[in-house]
Image 1 (cartoon, rainbow, N blue to C red):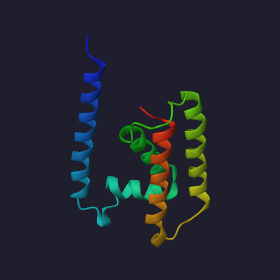
Image 2 (cartoon, one colour; image 1 turned 30 degrees about the horizontal axis):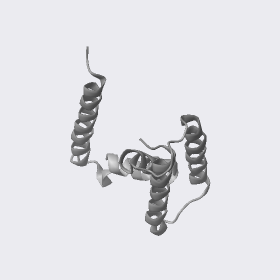
Image 3 (cartoon, helix red, strand yellow; image 1 turned 90 degrees about the horizontal axis):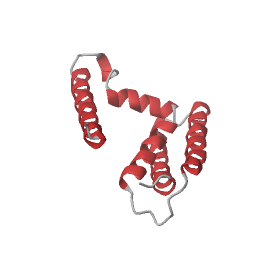
Image 4 (cartoon, rainbow, N blue to C red; image 1 turned 45 degrees about the vertical axis):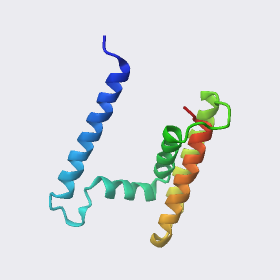
Length: 124
């Protein structure tokens, strides 16, 4: 029987390699302004769907900010906190447009808020 841990590692490595190969291809395929790259698409989607930079932060907090002083939170409570927060940010992103010069600070704030919430509400 296959060890699920080894299967997870293989899937993660294959996904990383596949995305890397695709990123190199679309960066060098001659499309004007590189509008088909993973970076460009995620950047554009993140400006519209604020839940994306927030969710990236939640995952970073969950994966790498371990040893939280808080007791582990019940998964239902985590869902009741993280899902509405991401949904609210997604809706806010539809209605509030941030000028390009302020977007880096806005994205950083969303990322940091996600890191904090991911570490506190969804510890390993």
